[in-house]
Length: 77
Image (cartoon, rainbow, N blue to C red; front, side, top):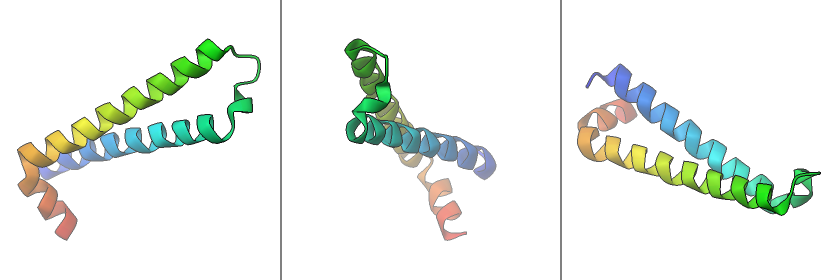
């Protein structure tokens, strides 16, 4: 895998992770933000964010374990 492709895939997974963590934080810290939505919507959003977090972590770990040499090269610059 080329370093550019690895970097793109890893960056995308990292962005997904950050989005999921922010969503969970917002849901936890500001539950009134759900407005007119039902409790079911709230739980669905929380479950979706957790799934996104798990998927992002899995992607990053897979990239590191399968293509770790590229990861190390990118980190060292």
